[in-house]
Amino acid sequence: MTIFAGRKPLEHKTMHADIKELSVYDRDLDLFESQYPVPEGITYNSYIILDDKIALIDTVDQRKDADWRANLTQILGERHPDYLIIQHLEPDHSSQIDWVMERYPECRLLCTAVALKMLPLLADYSAYADRINMKADGDTLSLGRHELTFVTAPMVHWPEVMMVYDATARTLFSADGFGRFGAPDPTLPWACEARRYYFNIVGKYGQPVQTVLRKLHGKEIDAIAPLHGPVLEGDLAEYFDLYRSWAAYDVETEGVLIAYGSIHGMTGVAARKLEELLIAAGAPKVTVTELSRSDLSEAVEDAFRMSHLVVMSPTYDGEIFPPVHDFIHHLAIKGFRSRRVALVENGLWAPAAGRKMRAMFEQMKDVTVVEPTVTLRGRMTDDNIAQLTALANTLLEKSV
Image (cartoon, rainbow, N blue to C red):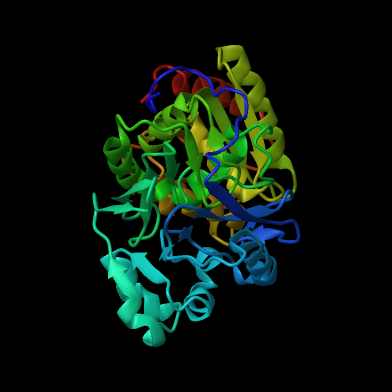
């Protein structure tokens, strides 16, 4: 099947018999990249293709190096890898490069030219410099039965990234693409944790993702093997459809995210009132998140997912309330765009959060700030309710 055929993934199948998953499930990690909560942990995946020649694809995070080495040597037995293919040099996938190249002196390292320039920052390749070969987009490698094609994917999400397509196994080794937080169990729901992973890790680089999706168009792919999360198999159209939508910053869910901060609870009361008014105005879905207490990565995910956003902030030391400022800053650095945004500020004596939030959103691409900003002065009044009612109606008049 082609990657754009069908509508929903099929039941889990087994990957090609020649391909072995060399995956380590890290249940002990609480924060991925020291910032994203992973209550169900994270997997570090690499892969081995067993053929006349053996290809090892990527290594592992140093946190799990001993487990990974044990699994590798068990799978290989008396054999050795002929190639170590580097898709991605981020430390959670590259800690064992030197170990592999030292242990297996026949092994050659294959990577992009950009990766070779970056390699000294993460490994000491002086002892095996003569065993490194650079691969460009479209280059091929025969292992015997398996024919590999290298697909460069710069800025998905680092500049050195390349994916590997195995035409024999009809498998795409997708680097960090199609990754997911949590357990490697393929029977668990995929989209929610994959979406949170995408928008917080890859999301800024929508255009490069679109470019690599175009490169893959038309290839026969029955399995996607990412560096995090489960291998995806069967009818893959749903996954590719979601990735195309996310990369294009399309609206996935019609509705409104209300993201607010509240120092003493008064702005929170207004947020819940606005939720009620938006539902009455016809919003198909309203999600409310208090930024002081919620997972920031989930708030960012919801902002990209929903068609409309309302940000509500008290004024704090003449500035935006810090949890709200942090949220808007994260949206900016992740490339938030193409949405309608409404603003509500609060301030007893000198409200300033509104104009400062507006200045941040006006720097983002194709973001429309809905007029006017609603200003609360402490507790919510009847006049404020009327203003929030008008804002709810204006916000929902049309989509971007």
